[in-house]
Image 1: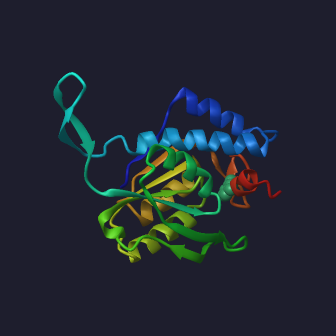
Image 2: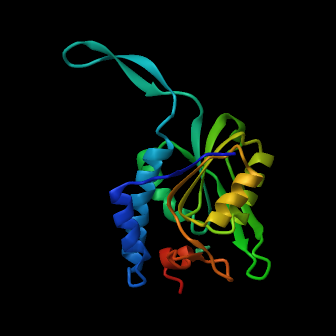
Length: 209
Ligand code: URA
């Protein structure tokens, strides 16, 4: 089964608590998601392979390191995944981006694809799938299905808040895809929302409620 890491850091807990508050403004919510995105990016890339490189400082030469291995693709699931993208790109500005448009059918709670655009060399890249809310796990699993169908082999998943049901679903469907999340909440309610959660992440990022 794929490993799950709850990124347990006071800065992340503090910022996430501000975001959960129903009175957090759209502007603050977005800024905080950027900041947590950056911090989660730091964690999800912690084990990237490195190679030694020889460098000349103004004083002498020494051996430094450079990141090696597969280049990164960030794959936000539209639309809430976009909220994570700025923070991630701030840390890895050379990464490519794959967009996956999925919406959740409010009756079946199943993920339906309406858009997909990704670099053609997914097989050669490490694909980091982004969705702030890992709720039922249906969108996450479907997004990863589509990425794998287009060749992706090395994938990771990053969420802000996860429900145990979503984690179990994703781990069952894609046991090879490790998960990083800022919080593991209690459960899903009857409408598929994470409790205590933070409400509809897309509406809160884009101010559409
Ligand atoms: N999507 C959201 O935006 N929030 C939830 O709680 C569940 C799914």
